[in-house]
Image (tube, rainbow, N blue to C red; front, side, top):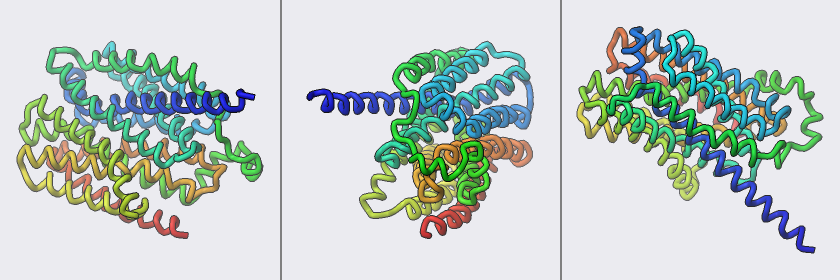
Length: 402
């Protein structure tokens, strides 16, 4: 008679292990996201190309990410969370190991596509998996907060290794080694199917072969994907070009600039841990919190742009990170209010994949503008994108109220 009491406890421990591994997976991809901007000057020097050409790495990474987002629903149905996430982590390790040898630039671009695909599989797979668990909104905020933990460590790790005379390839080697335990963890601890699956009747409402097409045609999915594409563009533009802006435009030292970029990712992390909890206590919902965060991004961008000085730069980038922090998980968390339940895993993949197009287009555009107008253009560029986000969120918010 004791078996019924033991089985739920074992399931609960298994679920906690899965969630902990998911958080570790986001720390790993956060390391890559945070360190990338610090490595750009070293890669520019080694390959002797312009900022526009080195910006092709953003497009290569995003190509892989978009493909991963499009494949998310199919991979989860065919391989389950276990196979899906183990595959993503294995590709992440293989690609970063290849980058570690500092190959020819064309090979680096190809490896970056694989790097983006592996990262995108981890990202979309974990978002889809946690979105169907109890208390999904809280779990998603924590999941993305742990991305910020990795992104906080990444710039300091990369800058510290570079200042000690190590190559940028050595940083990729650290990523590859760090990912190996996750390959084993996902393969051994994650289930072969969702613990919580949409009802069979929901699947019957739409043939599985057309789920991706239905997601791509759904107006709310398209609006949300566009919103996240611009949002990710702001986040990645700041995260990747802030280091160069601080060194080349504001004249800060390399290590100090690395710490400031880490402050940006610290703000992003704290924003995801803290701002949503404060908003809930004050009775502020996702719509109001997102509007407040967008206003904060506009204010902090203008502050760093117009007021020189190290203290303002440090405080401004921390504030930028903090206000950016909750926006992505809030958008994912409200998706079930925007779409039918049977669309959720595929729609999340679409959002993750399409949104990352912004991680290629807008940082590349920021670098191209900087070629002609100087890196001082970074902050007004991000302010204009944030104004566009306000308009797009207003369109999404109208649907949330219906």
